[in-house]
Length: 52
Image (cartoon, rainbow, N blue to C red; front, side, top):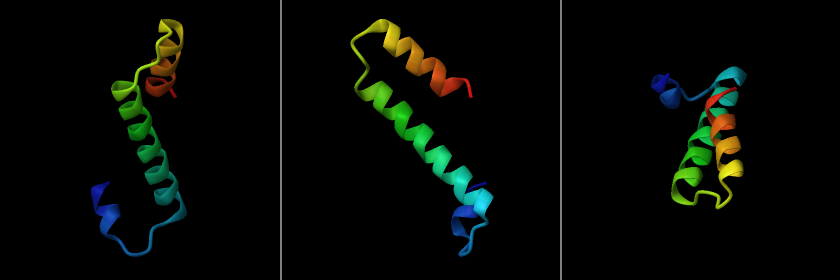
């Protein structure tokens, strides 16, 4: 999939996949860097990140 980053014209599906992937990585990074203080919220966010 990394080869899609170098293709000048991306398909609609590739753009959607890339946007979703970047959102998931960003959400995971925020969860690691600034975890919520409430354990129930942290568990729900972690479950939502891992399970589609």
